[in-house]
Length: 410
Image (tube, rainbow, N blue to C red; front, top):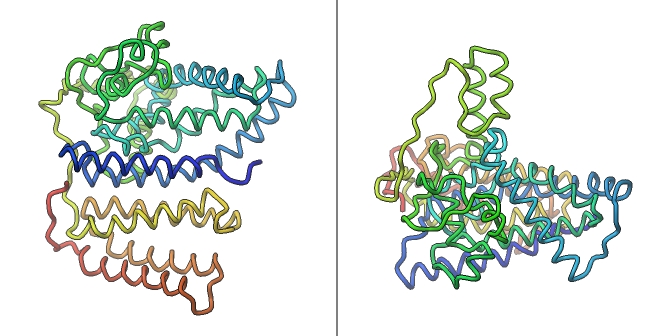
């Protein structure tokens, strides 16, 4: 198994695009990005990166077994096989993506990505823990054809980065031949639309021809309203990830018939068990949409800007070998990372529990870094760790009080 997760190399490139889009918003005075949703999206991605370790292990062992014992051909790794594999990944993903909108349990895995109510590169990061796991339940067919597991994992990462680039409002419709063949930001804006004519359209990530062939194509016309019909109404990454599973569970518990309790998970999205009232689908447009924008604690922007940088550093320790952490230390680091991003949501929603939780997290993270890195003697690194921890505790106790003034989120 390769030592470093391929996403470690993609991360800095994605960060450059994020910074470029932020700069473009400032220069051209566009409000395509709000601080609160951007932090929520970024935090969700940092947490979800920890699942890539599990996915990588599954790919190398499960896919490796299939490739060793059941492959039909042995396809070399070169430029032409990479193009063929990209097309294969794109075709498989079209159907995985489509089923993710058409089957309840797969929509539960995919819907966290759609729950964002903006369209920018931060939204591309708002992935789902379970979607990463679900996607690789389908790409195994490519190993039977003869593509090596490491090759598949790498090309899927490239495919995912191509999809990342679609998430922007800065790019208008492109030259007609490009729009005809390839998925563009215009096509993908439609896919994220909650407007009735845009629901469940444009599933392609690299090529849009799959949608044209299979009848799921829609052109961007009316201004797009982004989001989902049943928004989780929180920035909490755990609830964002499992919101629709909870919805399905509640339907299963309330269903009068046992058969409906079981099949609710595999029925078409929107299906409701017999005897229960089917909720009416609202007609949401860009003109009437009311977005989730709770008030945040005073001082949240400065504090969270620093914490995002620290969260990136912690994520690198979890998904790569830069800090030479052991497997156990990486698992503990992943837990600390999730604790951190859950606290971010509490800060953004001005929750009373944040004061205690963030103080304890700051102490625990500082202690973990000292132990993991074995910095027991006085040094610049030990001073930096202590300074960050003390600053975090001071800021938390000073600003994140239930009675503190709360500005409107922006």
